[in-house]
Length: 252
Picture 1: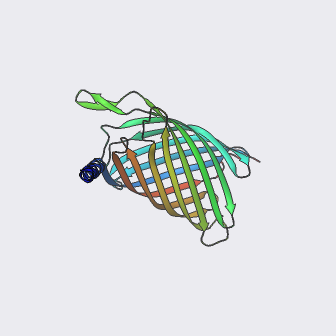
Picture 2: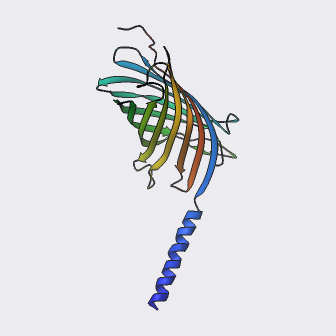
Picture 3: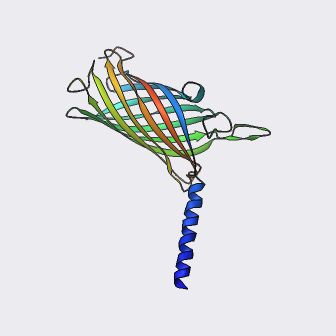
C-alpha cells in the first residue's frame, strides 16, 4: 500500500512538472541594433553621455524599439566614474509575442562604473539602477493604446573584457575583441515573485578610429523572461555600435 502511494505521488509530481513546463511559451526573434553611444568630455572631469539606439526586428523589416538616453558622468578617480540621467524608449509590436500596441517608457537612471587595465586586458564593471515608468497597452474599445504609467525598479550588472589583437593595449588604430555579459533584475512589490528580467551575452570585434573613438560589430544573444516566467524570448541580435569619445568643446 505504501509503495503504491509513493508511486502515485511520484507520477503526480512528474505530471505537475511537465504541465508547468508545457505552459512556458518560447519564441526566437532576429534583430539588428544600430547604436550611437557617445561619451563626450565637456570639462576636465565631466562628460556628456549621448545615446541613440535604432532597433529592428526581422533584420531591417520591422521596427522593434527606438531608444534615446542621456546623462552627465563624472570621473571620481582610479578608474571609477558615476553618471545619472534620463532615458526614453518607444517599443513597437514585434516578433512572436507582440505587444498589443506601440507604447512608450520613461526612465531615470544612475550608474557606477569601474574601468581597469590588467596587463593587455581592459576590464569594465558597471552597476546601473533604473526607475522605470512603462505605459503598457490597455484596451480601448476594439483597439489598444498606451495606458497609465506603471512604475518598476530594475538593477543591471554588466561585466566586459576586451583584448587588443595587434598591439599590447587598446589605443588608436588597434583592432580588439570584446566579450560582455549583462544581467537585468527587477525588485520591489510591483514586480511580483519573478525578479529575473533578462540577460544579454555579447561578443564582437572593434577598432579605434583616430580623433573619433571606437566602432564595433558583433552578435548578442538576448533572453527576456516575461509574464512571471511563462513567456521567454530568445533574440538573436546583430549589433553595430559607434562609440565616440571626442570632446564637444575646447577645454584644458
